[in-house]
Figure 1 (cartoon, rainbow, N blue to C red):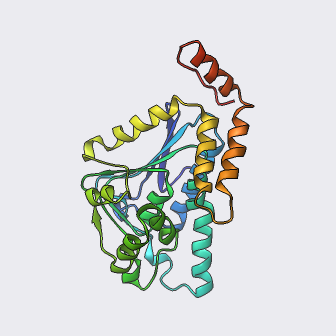
Figure 2 (cartoon, rainbow, N blue to C red; figure 1 turned 30 degrees about the vertical axis):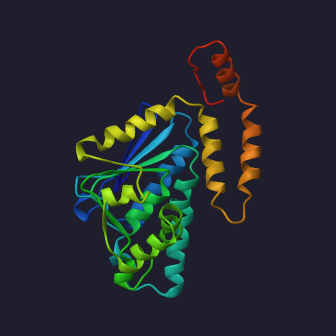
Amino acid sequence: MANQNILSEIRDNVLYVTINREHKLNALNKDTLTELAEAIELAANNDEVRGVLLTGAGEKAFVAGADISEFSNYSIEEGEELARAGHKNVFDAIESCPKPVIAAINGFALGGGLELAMACHIRIASDNAKLGLPEVSLGLIPGYGGTQRLTQLVGKGKAIEMITTADMITAAQAEKIGLVNYTVPQAELIAKAEEILNKIKLRAPLAVASAIKSINASLQYDVDGFETEIKEFGKCFDTLDFKEGTTAFLEKRKPVFIGK
């Protein structure tokens, strides 16, 4: 069945995913999260896909938050399950995706929208973007990893300030504190994301996946990141891409990687 809430297509080995609820400022409802989960699973398992570019429809919003109308009457148990399912199926799945996922943040990235962007591996913001986690103004806290990923990205003090004040910050401020990698004019947003992906596409896909896995391990309390790196480093030696990369280096030519 065709997606109703996102647009997705593969072009030049990149899976373009656009959250397509512009009339709702691309707010995340259950169906949208389900479709996002399917898109990320496709990216992870499709050899044609070398990277993902995730954005929102229109110029006003990347994702302005979660669709509050869906959970305003939830119980404790329902609230926990909402967060747990979102973590597993979407946000953690994006972070663990072996293909790099770049968020192109056009306009508002608030609440679940900023959490979605933070789950991505790289973030680029248009200069009109506004970012924040306003959940405490609704009597909630971020439930899709926001308290954890924001702290990892900007540090404890700034994370507590942003979350407890519920204030929005500008794209320029977000870049200054390390929340986004780059701030660019809106007209250049997608091109900047494509520029980075085009560089990554020239590298060995299995090595890129190993790098993502090892970097993620550095932030997992129950995993030895150094041991993960050692094992992933060793695995690279059993790939055709390693043979190609070293041979090309010695022959002073550009490598051609096949992801095997």
